[in-house]
Amino acid sequence: MVVKWLVSLFLVFVVVFILILPKEYDIQASIDQKHREGGGAVELPPRTIYLEDTIVLRSGVHLKGAENGQTILKIKAKIHGEPNRAKLLEAEEGAVDVKVSNITFDGDKQNRESLIDDPSAHTISFPFVKNFEIYNTTIINSAGASIVLYNAEDGLVENNTIIDSGSNGILGLQAMKNIVVKGNTVKQVDYQNGIYFSYQEGKSSENIIIEGNTVENAGDFGIEVGHNVKEGDTPHRQIVIARNTVLHSQNAGIAFRTVSQGRIEHNTIEGYGKTGGYGGDGIFVEGGFNKAYDVSVTDNFVKQTYESGNANGIYITGIDGALIERNTVLNSNGKGIFVQASNLGEATADFKDGLREYERITIRKNEIFESKNEGIHLQGAGSENNEIVDNHVKRNRSTGIFVANIYRSSGLEIEDNTVTDNEANGIEVYNQDDLRLDENTVESGGKAAIKVVSTRYGQITNNTLRIADVDGAYEPIIIESSEDIETQNNIESY
Image (cartoon, rainbow, N blue to C red; front, side):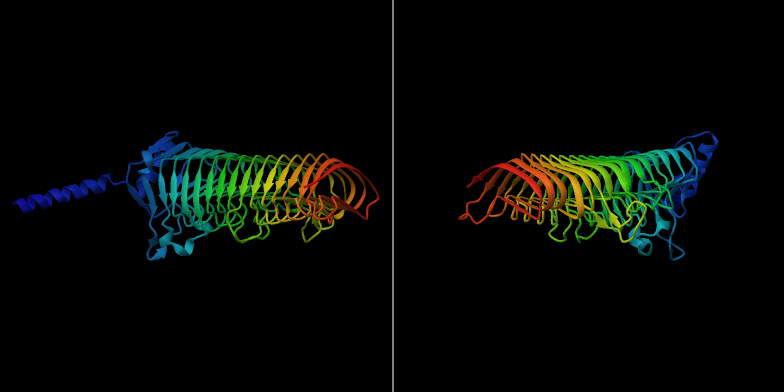
């Protein structure tokens, strides 16, 4: 009798458990019903729910888990023995007013290894969605990208935690508009970037704010907006990347690639460009097949911690109008700040000779210490109106400030800088039409304080030059192949 009673009780418990256990199709039915009612919240219980198929989020619905991420939606890794290619959550195309919060998503990539970095296996996907929020979620073990936005606008991605993503942590594709990505943590991305807004098929993004995020161990760039925009297409515009912490990226920490009206400010970047090469710099700003305009890089802290690679602290090319101000650059394996007319490889309307040129670059109030190459290096191609003002350039293992132009350039001002303890000359300028070099303090141990070559005319005045007295073997100023250079400076020996 007791055994029969226990069996009956067990069967009742099993039936009740099955009846109350939320299944994937129950979630979908609840979403569909709430959508038909005009919208509202679908609240999920604090338990693990396994999914075979993608949940589709409808307009007006807020899919909400229990507090503290206790609701876990986990993909069933195999269906009939084959890897499950489903996403965990996808908004229906064109959805409006949708939200997702307080859910832990588990993509189980360890059991779907063939789908790692596969675009069919993203965890959350929002295509052509307007007025959306994704917040307070945790996404672990995504096979593809963790969060994908596609032609979306007017959205917020905030306070999400992404851990061990197979592809991009947060990915925005094509025409993204009015998006805020704020306060998220992205740790460990196998392939691609931590946060990435990409040009694609002629479409660029505008009015994007990426602020207060932490990105660690990205497989490519930490945070990137761009990729090369096709010649003649509209650049990304009105982009702000601010107050982020980016650690140990394989390539660049933060990158603008054909961004106009953009700001990179108050970020901390440590460890970047592990293997070196193009695009591996702490901050990487380039005009691609179109020149970009009006970019500021201000108040950032950039420190190299990798022993390998030869990446620069801050790299600029193909920009007309850039302000590089109040940055601290430490221990670069390449140059501290490098502004270059780089070889594009083909002629375009903006780069007729195949060089990404630059104009109107202001480098001001930066601190560049202990680079393995030059502290500040400009390499222009007919570049005009560049300023290097009030920087502290110390203990770099080559020249402190180095301007060596491919084609003769004009309108260069180097003023009020403090250049000390660099292993080569203090300041060097080559192939310049005109030059104003004024009120700098240059201390050079056994090398020339200032060297100017192939400059037509200019002023080298009011500088304080402190030169190591090694039996008079070193001249404080060297001028070669130049025409009309005025010099009047205070020269000291020590």
